[in-house]
Image 1 (tube, rainbow, N blue to C red):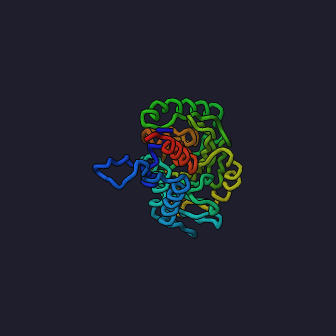
Image 2 (image 1 turned 135 degrees about the horizontal axis):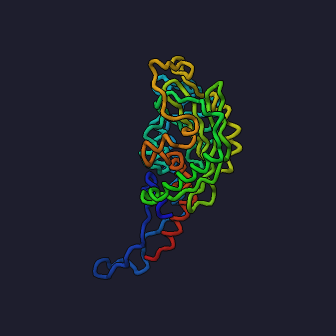
Image 3 (image 1 turned 90 degrees about the vertical axis):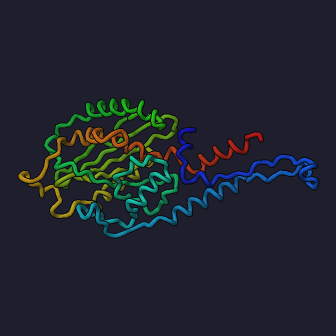
Length: 317
């Protein structure tokens, strides 16, 4: 809990408490009595101040709807009525300032999709982050040959090997429990999606990372839905709608690939799922999807607030 509360960031200023005043001596303040003290804030006052900070943050966001151009028009997002979109600046503020993720983990985020029924400050909310990796044309020739049992074993080993570095950086260790949904690839639309179940040390609820990839002429659109496992059915149900919202623009689509002029990626579908590509980009990228689940461990709404209140109210002067 100590490591998580260190990342509380934006809301640290919300928790200012008055401590009991020292009993004045007759020489310095003759009119005072030994029982006088500055009142300590009540839990209700603390909660009200905390909520005011959340409300202030929400008002500073600029939700968007309709057609959104991504990466200078390389791709396009058509926001469905059930969602709203936060641009890159707002998305990074949510991920870093509100949820406590490291800036490195969100450096390439183009924005995020949020279900309209949620605010990003709701504990039960989930979001879909969007990025673009211009790593070349990804061949899908291996799509039907992948042994997903073997791939899962390799992924578990990779996640486990990163845990020592996670601890050094002040983050909880993580275990890849398994597939929440095995990978599925549509060779017509060139869209791929799968889901992983993760367990973070010290957290009761397992985390869900639902991954969507759209293959293009020169790179890949990366969409990651981040939530907890109980919300898997809801996200699974929304996935076809999310897939339909995003695609590359003409001239940048998978079918537009020209082997004479375009670069081919050095990996295929298996490496795309397994995270081999991200591992070449450094520590924060290889575990970027798990770090972006930080919301569930840093802010935790009333739970984190209650822990602070208990600590400060129970402290002796």
